[in-house]
Amino acid sequence: MNIIEALNWRYSTKDFDPNKKISETDFDNVKELLRMSPSSTNIQPWHFIIASTDQGKKRMAKGTQGFFIFNEAKILNASHVVLFCSRLSAGKDYMQHLLDVEDQDGRFPNEEIKQNVNGGRNAFADIHKYDLKDVQHWMEKQVYLNIGNFLLGVAALGIDACPMEGIDVKALDEEFGLREKGFTSITAVAIGYRTESDFNTTDKTPKSRLPESEIITVF
Image (tube, rainbow, N blue to C red; front, side, top):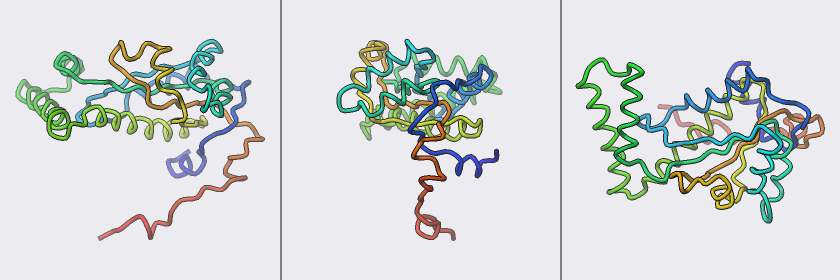
């Protein structure tokens, strides 16, 4: 489907069919969507934990107990669940690692451009670290760029999704030992296939967006 069809087809799926699974080919595409997302200065401050088995989804569902119990069934019935995680910091070693990977991928035609890219990325990181004092928030914004890209991408593959901020991030950080690894969980996205009885399908609950005249100004 084209991009407009995908935008109108997708919605936050509330009821996943537990008997329908994402194919291996589509799962490879799902992983590539996560990896190829844009980020400011190509900083890529993320890690993704994907639950693909019943046991894995049960572990992920530990973040939906108590107040967040309304999201438990989505996690358990989905084909896969992706936990989007953000780095807690981006220090000198990580910045060098990024530069080395880019260099190995042939990103720099010469040493001057390589050092310009490295200097620019570090300059932006320092602005957020020292001047704006929001470096962790800045990195979380990049993760949200990835989430938006991911939701549209899986829709183009004909895969349903439900982004869930209603999770216990502390419980999931502890379950997967994220903070010790320098990360924290942000949002979970369940992916799979809708049931015919899902109340939130667009034929039962039409999409609603503010009109173009209200949100777009063209000069």
